[in-house]
Length: 439
Image 1 (tube, rainbow, N blue to C red):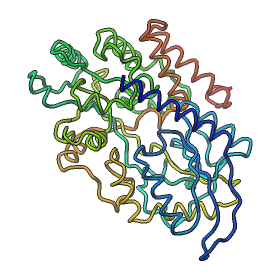
Image 2 (tube, one colour; image 1 turned 180 degrees about the vertical axis):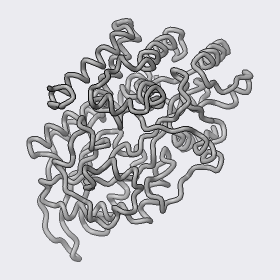
Image 3 (cartoon, one colour; image 1 turned 120 degrees about the horizontal axis):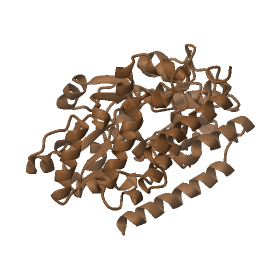
Image 4 (tube, rainbow, N blue to C red; image 1 turned 30 degrees about the vertical axis):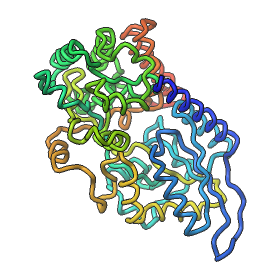
């Protein structure tokens, strides 16, 4: 009941926020106020996952308002609606002053923020961001956005106590993974917390395992972007889709996984109802904030997702970023806000105030990784994730989530999921008049 209540509240808030976003885009007029402060309100549009759930960005915005008089009006939309909504607003000239979107922006299938945004190349904070991350907000060496989180990496977080109790070792192959799941299930635990209602979570095994694609051919990403090979030429992709279906049917995701929400993952892990879930290392900090007695940092360890016998951790150099609408009347005030966010003391506030975040892409700020975590990360072979490297993948991410859900209910076969993914990618490429598809 508690879980259902959380879901209902979340959906209600999301719907209300979406209405606010549609009705309230654009800048509110302002003038100089008392004490030389500006009476200006900047609109800030984002999807739900674009802003930390802790509210730290809103807290920083309030500090900025106290200092300058410039208010930030946050307008947040559901993840599944955001990409289409902001595209419509950008094309109609009604987009917010500041826009949060996923990166990189250099892919042909991106939202092309270089066409809609103020160039920021000469801003004083630009040279302080990690170079690999800066590329995600740049096009042809021109910078258009500011971003903060460090490289994103998704692992299986597992309960060490449950593994020790059952005499289980960390799996390194899919076969070993299935054996571990079966023993956990037989012991009365749900092996894996999978959150299908959010749409994005079940897709991670497909595209965070791009190292398998590059092991097949180091030039695979380029060949896919040039349409010299299609997704059915990557055996690992169909293999993983079939493996997901197999695990779902074996009960390894539990009985009610089709109604699971990511918002309830913390409770599932802290109560030890579930033994594993896919998350970033920083997710342990989120759990500890709500369930301090659980000691998640000590109890939860990590291993690389072994789908398809994968051994390479996928790295997303920059997950989302903020951009200034080129049509904004207050682009200088928006730049002032970016300068404020980039101050070292405010970067530290962000890192401390965002429990799920372990590091920033600003090398001057020390990460929250423990020595053990850092040694673990340093030991891993890494590869860029598919969605930041291959066109027409990230843009259909939520649709792929629905395809997988349809597979779990028996409406689609694994082969049909792959075909749908291929067809959708081809359709998007042709709409973009991509030269690889349109001869």
